[in-house]
Image 1 (cartoon, helix red, strand yellow):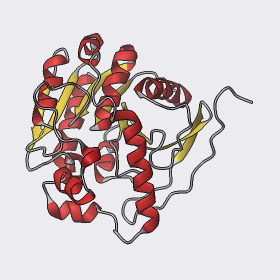
Image 2: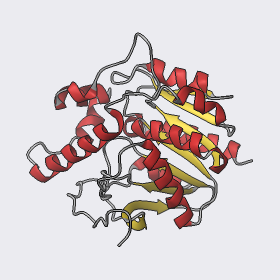
Image 3: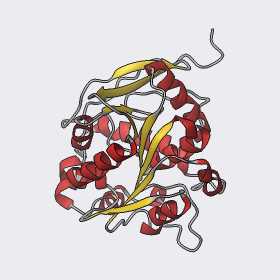
Image 4: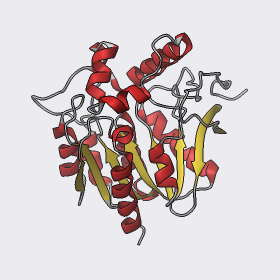
Length: 276
């Protein structure tokens, strides 16, 4: 018997749009679900706290220019979470072993929202693994006097309203409220997110540790983020050495879903430049 939990694959509901079956790689006894497509520079994308189990339009646009790898972290999508999995330290070690399993040495790392925090932590643990780092509406730093809203205190309608500025896109991606299995799954993912980011809501050491990052860096902010203060992205851009800050027009916090084409254009150009 391994020293870690033996965790079985989980059965989850399949979204009506953009669902694709994942591949699995067993890491530390956990079957990590991931989706991978494309050729070229290896790109690792760490998702946010929702909209898992899908091959999103943004993923397709990026995979047309690179070897795009999108794992689902423990507790999200089709990746179960063992009892011992607690924080971003555990996740960073897990992702390092995941890349080893895939035979990928150095990557362009992209993290969105909660995944931006995870990507930033990974970058401070393993800076030599990175060819570049891009953070999309990230969280994880302390903003004195402007902590933003506590998403765990919001009602579902209020949360969705804050996530999206484009209400047409919001309706396209909002699950059917009468789908009981989807509701249960979303609750489980929300619980997994709480384990990682509720207490604490930032890492005081991260600002100092990010000085270890030496690769090209990019932070992308929304035009008007109603969930996370725009100052959060701006602070990440100030802290990261030599960082460039971009803004995607007509977006809220869910810029990956609201405007995937202009976002993909910015990311593809950044990755191509960093790969030279």
